[in-house]
Length: 132
Image (cartoon, rainbow, N blue to C red; front, top):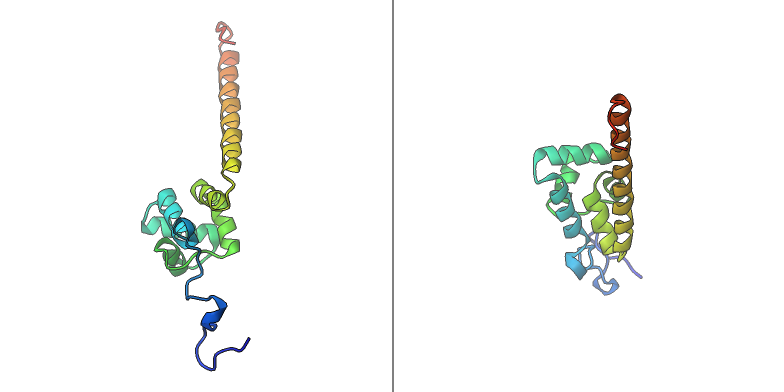
């Protein structure tokens, strides 16, 4: 493979078309941008929040929101750690929607446990109450 004498792009026969996204489902960049907007809205506060989560520059994060560029692997991991929308989108693009169901089930179980603890605490605080 020979590199072009001028410019920073690889030759066209290598399949590089200037955009590093796949055509299915609107592409990685567009899907992540949509997930960020669903999760945080399209505001300056959302940009600042994502910048804090990932440690990325605000201009970089604005590019993610506008679907100009997508996050790198490390930034994507940080986004998925903090945003269920991004995690869900990533799992859907990977064809692993079943994992999101398992995550939601675990969260529901945890919520039920917390509710039961609260009800038990209320019944202990009021000895005349025979709820459980």
